Amino acid sequence: MIYPTADAYRSASHKRVMLFGMSGLGKTHLSNLLRDAPRAKGGGWFHYSVDYRIGTRYMGEYIADMFKREAMKNPLLRELLLSDSVYIASNITFDNLAPLSTYLGKPGDAAKGGLPFAEYVKRQEQHREAEIAATLDAARFIERAEDIYGYRDFICDTSGSICEVVEAGDPDDPVMKQLAGTLLLVWIKGSEDHRDELVRRFDRAPKPIYYRPDFLADLWSEYLAQEGKPAEAVDPDAFLRFGYARLLDHRQPRYEAMARWGVTVTAEEVADVRTPPDFDRLIARAIDRREP
Image 1 (cartoon, helix red, strand yellow):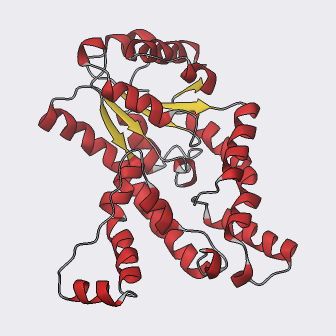
Image 2 (cartoon, helix red, strand yellow):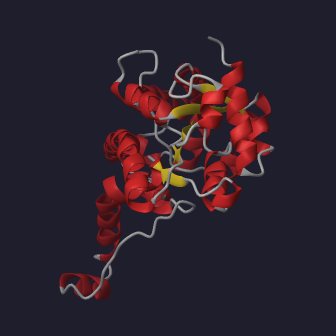
């Protein structure tokens, strides 16, 4: 680890931390807190959002093209587009990633907003490649943040699916090696109660999500067999609900493997963080209790 002891972290002139774990457990909340607090009070961290980087740098063109295809169906907008009279782009922010989610989509019945499964798989692969590239970009942004803007402290807010695009059990995994060499990896671990709440929240409003290809293929086959429907008749939201709890269970050991490269904090501990000094104390405690 780049901070082998709590004292090394506390005394570091540059703090560089990466948060990972399931969406909804506090990664972006902590990142916003560290970014927005005054520097005099320990804030002023550079906030690097992997999801934002995916949606702007690596998938922004895919997203804009999706909007343009829809616009071309409207005669007025078609004419304006063909004459370069209008400009269409997404407006992704750290707190609003809806354009990225919309593009990733859901498989199933087109009348219910679904995509053909082959198209869905293609977009999943695009997301996988984009996530790897955006995650690796964190190292370059550490340098840019200080060189251009004068930020000495850096927080990397990862995508919830990062565990799906690395092989943390492999000591030679290139993504894990780069991350561990430049950032302190911090897993926000949820309890069973958190898991159940995430499932309830997802059931109320299913959102597009990334799956490992083998996991997705098995899940899709199982769902089609259970429902006895052709792929084009599948209710997209029902499929997502069907797989979400399984996805949480599938990701848990993958997060645990990643955590061996860094430290672990609990979602309950994260909920108690109110200030940047609280965050620093949380990280120091996590380093202190880490098993050798």
